[in-house]
Length: 115
Image 1: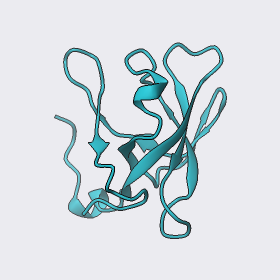
Image 2 (image 1 turned 60 degrees about the vertical axis):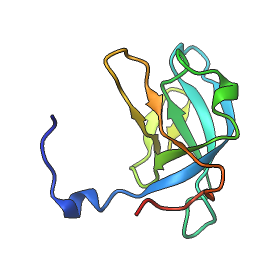
Image 3 (image 1 turned 135 degrees about the horizontal axis):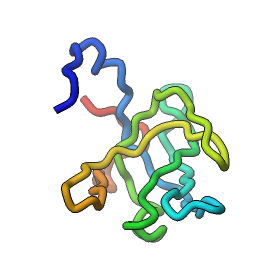
Image 4 (image 1 turned 90 degrees about the vertical axis):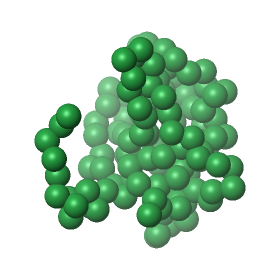
């Protein structure tokens, strides 16, 4: 288990439902997809964001595009070889190595926060 964190620190995370609008290959990468994710209306949500995810080995674009997942919306942007990642897709990492994505019902609107 990782180091424990205070509730106040955990509460700083902005976990939101996001809809994957588009998925593109990242030139030269066997692991990464560059996704356009709708994190809800601005200013309460995050609008459209570019988020990179290292799931290409396990998931086809069609398994991601148009679907809702859980994202961290308030991470400091991270420079990537082909752009900037403006969030993080959450997944469970079992011993098998294949990340298990956290899908959200289609009835959930992009940008809705976890409570």
